[in-house]
Image (cartoon, rainbow, N blue to C red; front, side):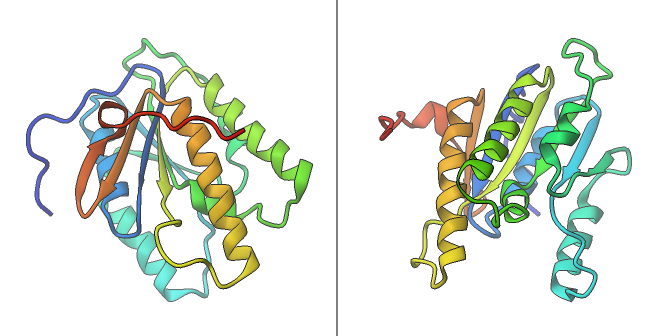
Length: 199
């Protein structure tokens, strides 16, 4: 892996940092780099399922685990991310309080695809409120799924649409937002302008 050039950007002492990008872009590694160089303890919050029978998924999990420094703590939140976040204390000005690194939004969303209408709206609101309430820096890794062909299944389209909408809401609340493409991290808040809300 090529080392990042220059010093890593400083994380805010509190607030949300969104790191998004397509598959294999380096988004997780960029979020890990930001966490590593923050000088704070790191709590890695995993949202993916275990999938003991899926060998390719297990290999992916192993690669991520091997990359993490031994001193990082891990919290397996799965689909209960909002509930787990509400249990965390936050002391933003303490050197001992951690950076949270949540990986990833899409695997959390996949736990809740069966929810419809108001039930999904409530789950989405619970997550937004739990993230907003944290007095800690939070790195949230998000998958980009809407750059390719239209999904062939209804559930694939639902996943894409919900993820895209939720990412827009999260970036609107974020202190930093990074788009990682082809191994390069772009500062979206510095380079981009907000798109008017479509209601």
